[in-house]
Image 1: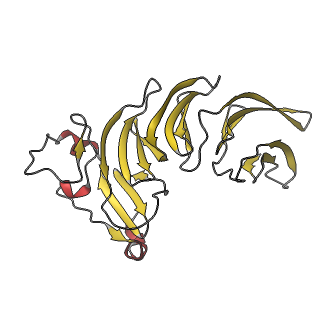
Image 2: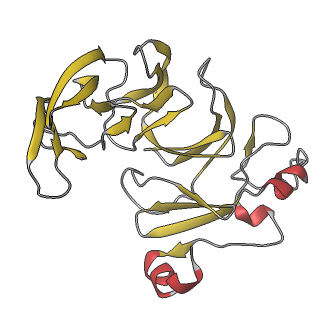
Image 3: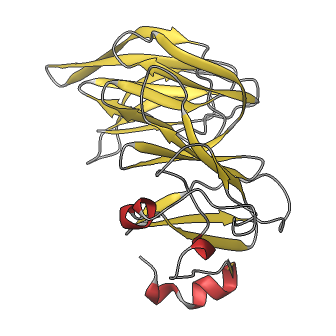
Amino acid sequence: MLHNTTAKAVIGVHAGNGELLWWYAHETPYDMNVQRPIYHRGRVLISSVKTGAVMLEIEVRDGACSIKPVWTSTDLDNHHGGVTLLDGYVYGSCWHRGWSCLEWETGKTMYHERNLTTGSLTYADGHFYILSEKRKMSLVKAVPQAYEAVSEFPLPDAGQGFSWARPVVCGGILYIRYDDFLYAYDVREPARNMLKTPSSESADENWKPMGPATNIVPGSAYPEVRTPMHRREFLSAAGTAC
């Protein structure tokens, strides 16, 4: 079964023949169901602008599908950037402002930090790598108790518009695309262990330390320098990327 969204609904489709198996209305003010549904153990979660999140339970009996809503929440109305399920909790940003964590089974709001800019995220090694739509990169502990930022830094002052592309962590390298630029930062554990709080003379201007030993630091802080590339340069070197 394939799960997807249309402008006004969440749907389930037979993967073999394309037959529509189920349909659930999920309308938003702007027909924007951007977030891909999350499926886990017979349930599907969708989160959308202003309408919020809804958890659906799917039951298959005698070849027929039926669905029923389990819970709804307006504390997680994702615009872009994705929602991530991790260890029984879902994390994501909200329309306009804020980041939230909800319990998967019940929809209970674990936290809802409103004074934060919306953005996108990816998960690696116990942390979320969060890129705000205003070009700020943050390292956040992946815990449901609270939004705990460990470190952050702004992207270089180049390009235009919102930073909506999702960050990627692969092979110990954090990749961030913004406008026509691709940035790569070394976030491997050995490099983190070597970090010391820099003096004002030696600190990279893009580094804003918020805690010891686990700071995100731009790649220029390491011996293995990975300089920002224009997107066309990156595409021409795609054979060397993961």
